[in-house]
Amino acid sequence: MTNNLNGQNSNQGSIANNAQQLTLALSKGRIFEETLPLLEAAGIKVMENPETSRKLILPTNDPDVRVIVVRASDVPTYVQYGAADFGVAGKDVLLEHGGESLYQPIDLNIAKCRMSVAVRDGFDYASAVRQGARLRVVTKYVQTAREHFAAKGVHVDLIKLYGSMELGPLVGLADAIVDLVSTGSTLRANHLVEVEQIMEISSRLVVNQAALKLKRERLLPILAAFEKASQALA
Image (cartoon, rainbow, N blue to C red; front, side, top):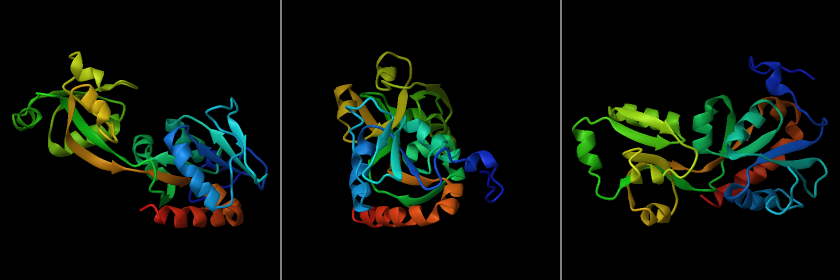
């Protein structure tokens, strides 16, 4: 089936399942766990645990709803191209993906944290910024970091890493990191200090716009239940 909605190409509208089935894209870990109560508010229970099951497609108690388990950074792509009808992704992931192209009807108020700049203990970040120094920054959030420092007029060389950001300043790879911070315990354990908060982060519901049109009757009650449950978390 092809469908063109608001000028989008037909690839975005392709739904690789039956006409009634809904596919929800989730990533393992905190987002998965904190989405479960929202699903239960909609009367949906996932029947298997992704941490113990080797399956990537998980059934629910509703035969017309299934969950696919994907990498967090891939959730927007599955939704954009219609392989999933809806999904849950962090604001950080959506910003890097270019999430403005996706319909994001609900801030779910789950998986809350913040994106911050951190440096090794003893590094005078404020003076370096004031004096116009060129900073080296490690991050996997390159787009967000670039926009943040550009808005401040700070010159940076961005180095993309996918893990262990805290190691960068400790071994001389970089002056600072841009990363997600929850409790700050990992920073403290590695002798880093948070010097600047860029933004608050939470997870959002994203919906394929063609699915919203074609499966509206099935989707809307679930979206309404998600919104009601998420408001209690705000």
